[in-house]
Length: 212
Image (cartoon, rainbow, N blue to C red):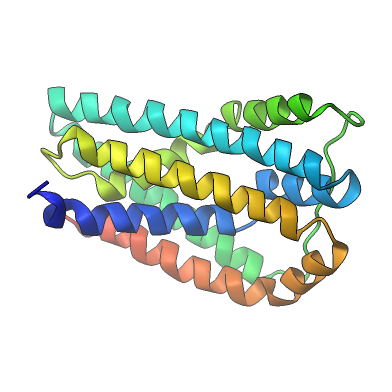
């Protein structure tokens, strides 16, 4: 672990990118909010755990897949970084666009009626696994932390760390947004939060594109 200082900054930046990505409400987070509000906290928690497991699966596939590609063909890291950096800039554009939008946050329950807790968990997992944007997001997150010649434990640290954060944060969404009051409070601060997210995604995207 003498190599830890060399890779620590990249790993922490990957954590920060992931944290802000799930803190910025997308369809998955809004589904957790809406389900918690309209169906109940247990259903929202089950959906959240399914989404977290789906995120973990994408993280595993991306991290170790990219590590294998880079180990076999190091110049591939350049293409991966370009793709990741461009996607982060796209997220920055979306965040700034959301900040400029004056409409309130809209959180709705999933269609199809009530389900069992396992049914909600399975639906959350399938939502993540059938979302092509999830793959692009993970390419960006992993690209931040991976450097040419990075050992396998770097990818493992990113995957495990983000999985723990995913479980905790999605569960907190389900708990906090089981009341309409919390959604209203978040809506009031949404534009400022989205503007801050846009600034970070711009910084992270440019950092990847301009790094050697």
